Length: 538
Image 1: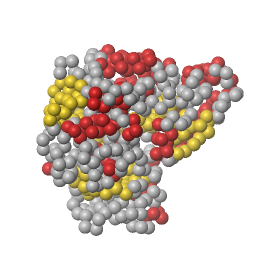
Image 2: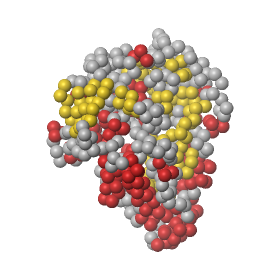
Image 3: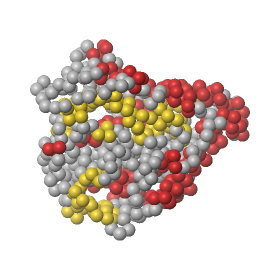
């Protein structure tokens, strides 16, 4: 099926609000907008667009087209220099010097300098910013102490000897350090305007400057935002599109409907039913998503502080049955590390290179629950499971609730929340059980394992395990790839197969619909997500 792309933005008829759930009523297109343009459907408006703030889906959609990292890795694993044109590192890999492009400009035509990178780093190390990625700055000298209020900000191991040189001193070698550079806290924010995560600079086109291919032109909360080509971008000649509109939708069905009606050109992360509807058609674009859907258990809540209870819950869930009901775009997961994450040293999937952490066993689960003092679920308190009001999560919650009732005799109360509210509850530790989904930020298992460390800003469930912390920390400085992989496998076995800190549920494929006339869409190697910075039409 061919979808029509016009040279101007697709103007939504007011009547669509009555036909398509989640359809916006505002017109995101100026009347005289010309040039090449696409419209992308994305999930609900969530989180800040400040790289030093509390980010979620909206920032991730914005940043891949509007912000340049120092460097990243391409599909072949080769370095793709962006804001930096070169780097050098000392012998023991503790001093990294990045030389910035002198032709790199912000979208207002002013130079991008080393101070702009330092601006994001220092603001993210202020807990008031709410950054969930602050712990990935901790390899830098004194960063963790500054975050914890134990050292002054000026003791941070970052130097800017001149406008175009950024020197980062690490407390000890970090073998995955270059991978970290694609994270929000290592991207720049213009020091002239980016002063606080609360000031609103990040959604104001006049102050939300971009150093990437596109800049923010308009932002209408809960409806859409528009990116226009950044005429000052150093590589502007390679950018084909003039405009990208991101429209927010409340559910995947509304996104699919909008695509079918020709109102959007790309619809991402759709339900598995779309695979059946579009089977064999060139619109369908299915990729392996480097992500794990799982449940956090709050160890500060009884009886989840008992490892026997946590193990029982894990063993009592039938993931094959769960995936059959949720959809054909899911596969059972028994690990925290994503099923589709590759080991860059072997080329195989990381989780396949070690023994599965645990196997389901309802009888053993019942024995464990009885040993913990709850035979057949008697006396077990009612726990609440909080999850987003997304179709996949709603179905998952009902299946898990039914299985735990049938297999263990325990009652789980379900509480659906708007996506932003679910994020807030999790970060505040205000939950018994809480849905979690993690899509890899960089192509290394550390992106998963670090989340359960005692000092992680994403450790929301009260995990404090010195043995686990030590294993993961050792893996960060181990230069031998075989020995490092062994440390990471041991850490995951401890966390998931012995202490049962989480409830892994399933891995996912990303089901997308893409107008066949849109070309040049790339898949980000680290996450499996789509990138439009070099897309074209025709």
